[in-house]
Length: 342
Image (tube, rainbow, N blue to C red):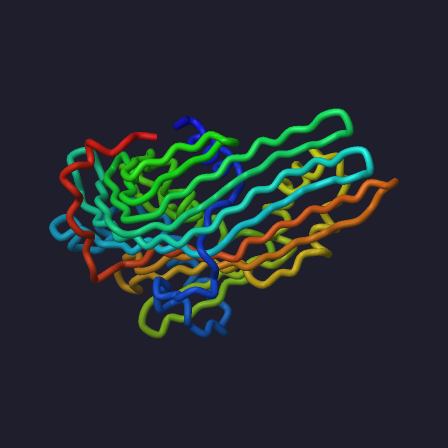
């Protein structure tokens, strides 16, 4: 039964930005100050060059400060929002559909330090995550449904290998349910999904700098800057660029259900709120002070073709942040070896 949770996480990994968090209307206390900046000036070539240089660095003393070797670096990882996707067809004779959803609010402090094998991280915090997927089909003769759900709620801990949850870890596959009060999941699978691929345990960097360096060169992205005290950038992607990056997923599942929609239909039927990448560095040293992703995109199309009703919908309303913290992680429990591995 442990396999059901792994299957759901594996399906999530194949779906970009699937894991996000509990309602954007909730308290946004995990947002660093850069999120509230009023970006109005287009970034200069000099500012972009400085940002690229910071993002390209592999020197830990540059990325995490000159005191990193002796004092380490504490980062706050925060994610909040929701994700939903549905594809369905329905006629008088049969129906079929695919539904995937997730909600999360995660707040986790990680202390990074230089270990003998490279970069090492130890973290504590809390997580409230639920997700599910459902595949169903019915005909006049037979029918069937495969549904999976997962729940991670409680105190969270992490080391270089695992993400631990003390509270409630439950997975369901159909009518089969398994629950644990204390469980652990592979860190390299869990962190990218809980924090929208923003962070991942690594002996090299830990934070996904490539995501931010790549976005600076994407066609259709406008980069704004504020360098009043530190170098702050906001890279805003437009709907055409968003669709270029994400339409293949919607088209793939639509085609599976026999629905013919086009790239342009996705663009035309998207309620595009925002898709923004944030970056903040120390202007002198290049130290990473904050990295984040904030997005709100809603796509919905439905219709009828030769007596068959169909629909394709997609919603992501989420944010994820990595920011330097004045707080350090708490102590890890002494009984982590007793947590059940999933």
